[in-house]
Length: 147
Image (cartoon, rainbow, N blue to C red):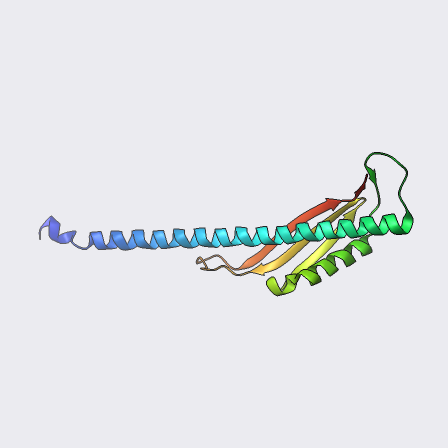
């Protein structure tokens, strides 16, 4: 049997192997891009919620308790319940739950800072074998400063 005859199907196997590798690479790139964009959307939503909470808390503090002592960059203490209420109101008004089914959120205050974390389930568009769907997280924070 000649050497050419023994290697007759090797090219087909090589082409099929390269095709599988290329398809997997495309799936990984598409899934990674979709996950990145989902995280960016949640982070933007967390940013807007943090700003809404900071604005609400700042206005509430000023109008109900008055201005703190004069000074550049006077900071006020953030009420955790008020911050949570403003974040919840912002997320409800923006329709976040409809755009991100399964959305959960947490608000933490640290003195004059409001820290928000949003979590939403994420389904991979193409689903690479061996990689399960996961959760996407967006975080943001805002500081309440009175000038």
